[in-house]
Length: 140
Length: 189
Image 1: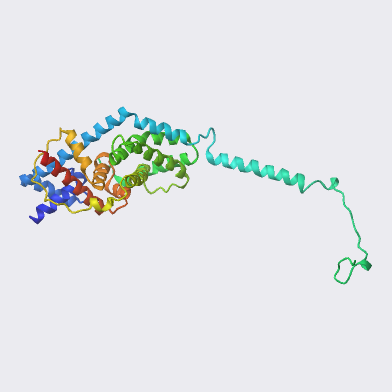
Image 2: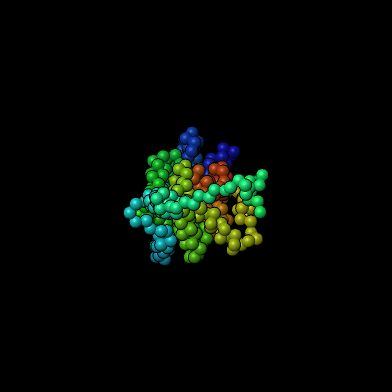
C-alpha cells in the first residue's frame, strides 16, 4: 500500500514518460510495476492520456492566439520600442562619441587656456617695499 | 517534451553569444530572439492571465524590452527563455494581484488535497473544452506548474526557478495540479 502510494506520487511528480524520471532506479521499478500490476498500468496510461490531452490543448491555444494576432502585435511593439543602431555596435558608437567629446574639450582648452605664448601680453608690476606693511599688504 | 534544462551547456553558450550581440546593439540579433520567444511567452502569459486578456501582451512586451535593456549585464548561468519566463511570471502575478488584491495567491493554491486520488481509469482526452475548463478552474500556482511543464517545455529545475520556489515545492505543485485535473475530469466522466 505504501509502495503503491509512493509510486503514484512519483507518477504525479515526474509524469508518464518514465525515461525522464530523475531517478533511474525508481523509473525501473515503475516499469516492472506497470508490467505486474494492472492498476498501476491503468494509472500510467491515465497519466499519458492527460499529457497527450494537455499537448492537444496547448496546440489549440496556439491556434487561437495565432488567429488573434497577439504575437505579431507584441513583436512589432517591442521592435519599435528599442533603438536601432545602424552600422557599428552600441559600444563602438560610445567609444567614437567619447573620442569626439575629448577632442572638442581639448580644442576648447587649447583656445581658452593654452593660447600660444606669442599671442599673450604680460604686465609686470613691481611693488615698492616702502608701500608694504609688515604683513606684506599695501599700506593705506 | 521537457528540455535538458540548465545542464544544456550548448544552449546556454549560444544564448550568451546572442546576448553579447544584442549588448553590442545588433538589432537583428534582438529581433531574432523576439521572433523566437514571443509566441511561447504570449501563450504562457495568456494561460496565466486568461486568453484574450490585454495584459498578457503587455506583460510579454515588457519582459522583452527588459531583456534588451539588461543585455549588457546578462549573467550566463541559464537560458534566455527561462529568464524571460521568470520576468513574465512576476509581471503576470503583479497583474493578478491588482485584479484581486485581497487574495493571497500563494496560500489558496497550497491547501492540502481534500480527496484521495481517484480510481485510475483512462480519461478520454478528446474533449478539449472540458480540459480547458478544468485548467482554468485550477488554483493559479497549480495551473502555472502544469503550464510550465506541459506547455512551455521547461525542465523542472528551470520551472522552479521561474516560480522562485524549490524544485521539491515545484514537483509537489505539479503533482497536485495533475491530481486535481484528473479528479475534475473523472467527475465530469
